[in-house]
Length: 271
Image (cartoon, rainbow, N blue to C red; front, side, top):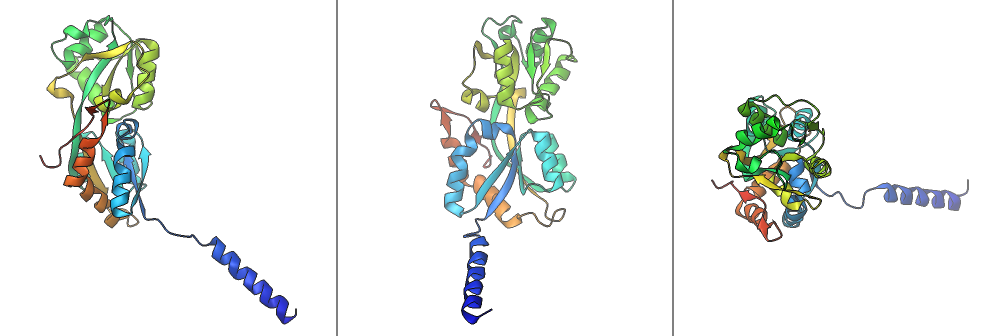
């Protein structure tokens, strides 16, 4: 091979190596979070603000709380952001998470057909509302996915002394948006977080039929996955996200997110 040909091949080889190299390495973290933070549009509002301030991209795995916690246990996320406090505290106590921080809250509401065949609007409390639905065997759409909402629903059935089963009980095994779609199609009752409800456009005849009971309070917490369990966890960037979201700037970003002029989530980090 002559010298000129060798030089050309060497140059081409160098160009191929340069083209294979990434132009830039954007720092990112993975957050496993409940579907309500995604379905409501909250993340679409706050994550660009965080990235603009820090340069850190947040990639979201949207799933039910139980699944999100399991994702954290496997080390497939850097941060877990969910809404089932007892499960979150167990996650930390078992060493999977470093520390739990309060982030925000809203509440659960019971939605159902406007004609309210089970008489839920006259209920004296959330458990009484669920008892009325069961007594009337009125269709009820459940997430059935071990999410924070599903956990809250199961607690309400227990308080009502009901073990839901039968053709009237529709377990979707899916997220909040899909479950509300099922409820709208079946003219069924459902328990939903207020944030997703306010963002939901396919309501059909559904409306809020019960709200306001203190047991429907819905707090959200955030935790860094323990790098001692999973050394590959991006602890510094993950903690930066946690620090930001509980800071005045993050709390203001949460408060500024509204749908139809109505605030969906209320910051609780300062409480």
